Structure formats: C-alpha cells, structure tokens
Length: 292
Image (cartoon, rainbow, N blue to C red; front, side, top):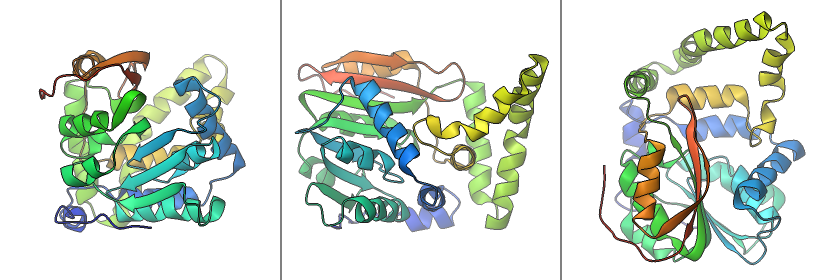
C-alpha cells in the first residue's frame, strides 16, 4: 500500500474538533459482514449503471473507496483498479479487502490521498471509469472535488457519481444535525443516530401497516443488502454522522458536467434527501470554469 500523504493531512484534527465524521470507523464495522451476496450485489450495481457485463481491460479509479467493496467489485469484473481515500481507516478497509480477495495483486493499487490535493490527483493520469459514490459531497469543497473527478476521466470514459439531493431547508437542517453528531461524545452517538431517524422509521413502518403489509417494512432491514450490497444500520450511521455535508440539484450537476464536455448516460433523481445518481461519458474537452 503506497503513501500519498502531504501537508493536506488534516483528518485527525478535523475529527477531534467535531468537524468530520469518521467514515472509516463505520466501514470497519461494515466489513465484518461482507459476504458473497454483498459482493455480487455491488458487481450487479456496476454492471447495471455502466451498461456492461465486464470491465476487462479498463482502468477504474475509485475516489473515496470507503469499505473497498466497489473497488473489489470492479476488480472482480476485470478492471485494473486504483483506490484512494482521505480517511486512514477507509484506506485500511480497502487494503483488507484486497488482502482477502486479491493478495499481492499488481492490478489493484490502494493509497491514501485527497481528491482536493491537485498534485496527487493529477499524478494519477486518466481512467476509463471514474467512480465516486456518495463521497464528493463530504469533502468540504464539493464543486472543486467534482471538477477534479471529472478531469480524471479519459476521452470516451465514464464518470459514475452520486451526490446528495439539495432540498433547501431540509438540507440545512440535516447539516446541523450531522454537525451535532460529530460533536457528541462517542458513546452517545449511536443513541442520537437512532433517535434522529426514529420518526422516519416509524412513518415507514406505519405506511406498511396501513397497507396491511408489515413485511414490507421488515424487508427494508432484512433485504437491505440488495441495495448495492450495503447494510442499513451502517448506512444510518453514515447518514446521520456524515459531515462535512453538501448537496446539489440534479440540473446543477448536469450543467456542470455538460459544460465540461460530458454527455449524460443515466440519471436517477432522488425525490427525498438521498443521492442523485449520474453516469456521464466524456465526449470532448470542456471549459474549466467553476461554479458553486
């Protein structure tokens, strides 16, 4: 595992100051439950969104690799993979999956780095697929991070991102709730997370009961791994604690990348506070203007 750490390494200080969620600590617990079913669901997600059954011969960049599950999925689909993350525990999680499934593999590189470190990111070169699901809105400088991610896509390559939907006042409220989570004593945080999502869970359970189908709510928990191989409680912790936190409207994301030479291949708009999922193809060199 190579190192890519420079003066940007403010992670520990931000965590200590209650200004950053420890995503890697959450992923370390998720890793305990990674199994063949979760891996298969992650592979299926990539195949569906990228519209291909194999990634053989392609270079795949995983920006903010988190648990490493999608880096693993891409490698199993045949890609040469480069994974990096700002959170040191996330890097350790990705490295652990590499150790378990592809020990010593020269076609899967795991590093620590920041998408906001221009020198590091530019040194990576261009990739056929750049993947960053639910990451760039947690950097503290989302639009700059989006710019950096797009710049790593080779001509004809694909960009697959997921960014939180901007819901105005609701988004502002959740930004405050997330900041509070990160400033609480650690033992209190799981209780705070549970209480924060309790109204949402009660509403969902009530709807299922009113329809006479309580099993629908139960399956939201028992069948959650079908959702990209994820784990519901770990996603709840990630959601409530995920700070820094920014969001965007789908049309803002479209215009941002369209002006930079990308065409939109696939879009799934979230009607709530979840993520817009977008897949673009780079068709030409675009402008380098910034937006906010």
